[in-house]
Image 1 (cartoon, rainbow, N blue to C red):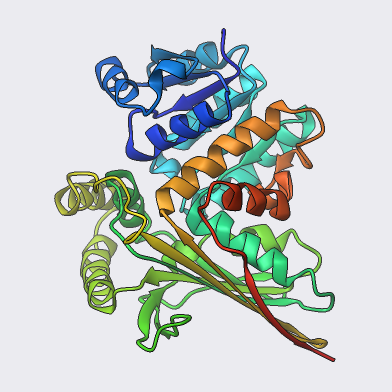
Image 2 (cartoon, one colour):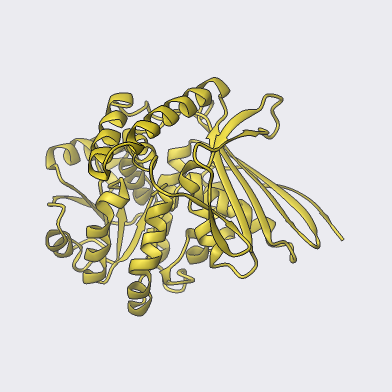
Length: 373
């Protein structure tokens, strides 16, 4: 192994962005995946590719093949989802090779699986196991932690909104989790969301409301279950565009109802096929004037309330940057704050992550409004 970082799934939409930002941080990497031709094409289109220090490696999706590829690497950034279907082999290979593991998952069921199945092993080996480092989760977690800088707040109400279209991989993940259990946190216990839950959501700085979903439960309740400051946490997600969101709700309801009547094997095949039919091409490269995000967090407790809004642009670029900085920080002595099962904020610090997003112009300064007594 001649490079410290492996990007597994580098030919995908998000994988290419991760590689772009690894180049910005001057971190050498291996662009890995199951199709060398796609990898070479993706890397050839990388802005500034002539200054990137990288290799391309094709690899089979098996524990043995991945363990061999990861041997000698310090960090693996996994882009290959749905993670509940393909993640275990990558995590086990990281454990075998002694490499930190980061991914971009939006699957609460996978985050909990990592905690319950692999967390102890990674903690014992002093390795980081951090699924779900991505705009839709980490940026909201940053906002929540800013709110929690005010002592005495123990309840989080999180809303994440974005404008744009999902990638092929994100669409597959959305549909793959339609029949998975999803939970919020209530007084330190996981509580299941009601089937088919939707809510009217107030969009910050906009007169029109939109609809929000539990969005597979998100990773937030899992991370904050490990935070002694927090006893309750609900997180929802949605699109700015109400008409589009109404279509998402209708489609998800119809497809989920059909899948619920099938065996698990039939449902898995049906959901992945449906996702491929709905989104067969990745969206165009993000446009700063179009692709925006908003994290809104209301934190409350006996001592008062604090609201934080964090506005950003280019949702997938935020994810690419967060992944690349995670790898960069893992390689720098003293920058990694926690090993074992840990979120991006727990591992790298929420203010540090915010600083990186601001430095690259991807988020504004958070707006904080509080009333404490």
